[in-house]
Length: 71
Image (cartoon, rainbow, N blue to C red; front, side):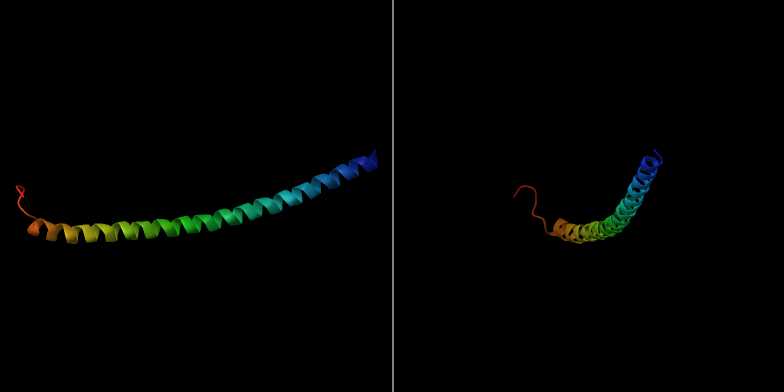
């Protein structure tokens, strides 16, 4: 009985060690993905700002040179 209990405890300790390693690996991946998401959000904001600037520039040119509505 004592040997069986030791075997079970060793098995549980081994499983716990593997679970700790897995949790750490998942955390590392999550942190890396969060960095990527933050970088992509910044790029998207910069692109949206640049697009709005271009629309503003081209919109003012198009308004002045647009043909009358009856054409």
